[in-house]
Image (cartoon, rainbow, N blue to C red; front, side, top):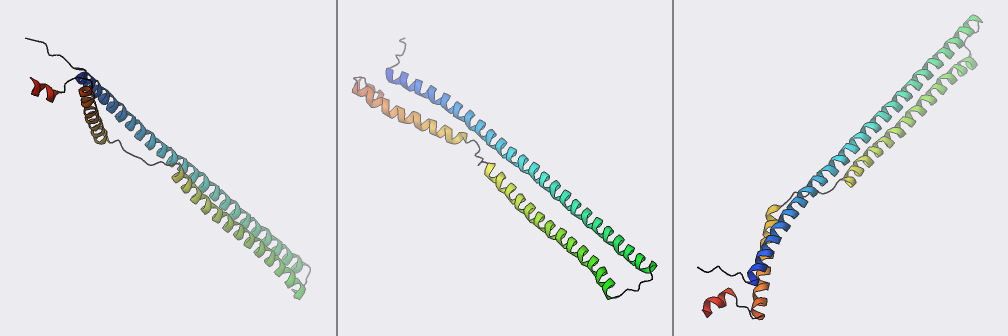
Length: 189
């Protein structure tokens, strides 16, 4: 029995198939790694956004509490001043005249202006808070990446096509160099 001889074309084709298998495995591993990295990037973007959301919410709560405390202190101070004014006027036996009523009204006006100023500042802070929250969301979207899952079927099809193309390229080259193709060998002998 004779050992079958391997032609140069068959050897090159075998090497091509082996190379394609290795490239397929490498590309498949690379796709999986890229998919994992994309998911990790998106998770980091989400975690970062959540942390920034929490920070902004804490900040606005602190500002709101501070504003509320200032309003409370202003009300207490104003009430004490009005009570002292009335007590002093009552002790002195002074009747509430137009000028004393105007002075008392000035306490109310000052308190009202201060509380209105606190409310305007709080509205400005809330508007800024809302813009910051939108910016955080936009930042998360900008930091996120498109997630493309691995597609081993497409890789396999691509590898098969590459082997087929190489087969079509090597057979005519072999014939041009004086080697017989498999079909020629069957017809020849």
